[in-house]
Amino acid sequence: MGGEKTPDPAARGTGRDAARRGYETHAARPRKHVREIFSYAQEITRLQLGDHYAETVEWMRALPYYFENEHVRVVHAAMLSGVPLSHQREEILCGSTRGERELTALFPDSYWHQHYTDAKPVVFGHHVTGREPMIRDGRIFGLDTGACHGWNLTALCVPGFTVHSVKAHGDHWSTIKRQWQLPVLKTKPWHDSTWPELAHAIERFSSTSDPAAYRWLEALQEWAAGLKSAFPTLVATAHRVASELTPNELRQHPAAKVLFQARNGRLDQTSLARQCPTPRRTIDLAAALGLVLNELPD
Image (cartoon, rainbow, N blue to C red; front, top):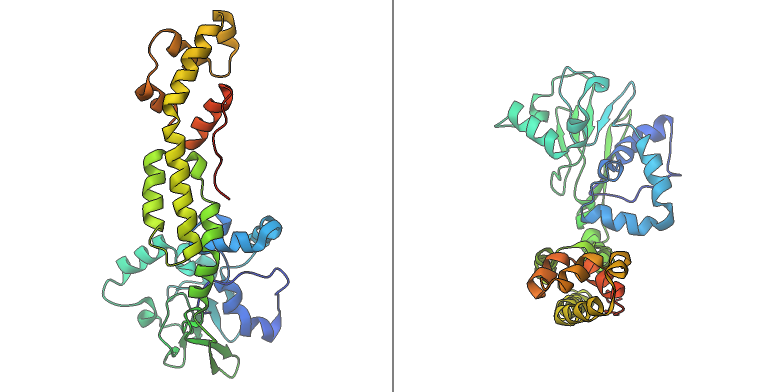
């Protein structure tokens, strides 16, 4: 309840058990996974699930945006009073950026739960309330007490509406972020990033405190520099190959465009750079010219 969890397709419940765990079930609903919007947490989860990721996302698609029984309503982030749960906007229920904007427009100087007047109690999370749950009027229960950050894990039992909290064993999110930083870095689309994008990303991630990740980023920077330093060799090789082939052979060549530029005296490092804006384009051109450039570091 104190942060994003890795969903377990087997973790289902009904009746009282579902009422007790309904918030947890919804809080784990990974809208970003379903919509293929990957922040750092989603990238980690995707790697953790490995080959089971696709089937888990399919299971996620069927999860509800809310839970309600005769005793309680459970939402992940928010709801509007006076509107049936089935008619609530998903963006508000799950606390997406758009949903947060809508709530700010409706309640610019207060929070949605300060305007909740329905008789049935509501339970929500998403926003950390502090180390203790937020309980108002015996009907409004904010249960995100920062468990993933090392604070407390809080649960509400119904129909008695008793609250239970236990202290987390540690700052789990900080630990997971450190453990998975290098694996996540290695999944970035470095081959298809432009040279400026690649340089910017390396600079951004180089503030890491993880020595292994920092060393890998240094190797990545050296790899990119090595590819760009091969431009003069690529130009020279293109001129040599272009001079050795007939016009018909040039047309059949996988690097035909570059070779015709060379043959016509229009290929230099500046024009080659336009043809090779990414590592992949550079490596592919080198391979077409019979050269082998270094691949991404392991």
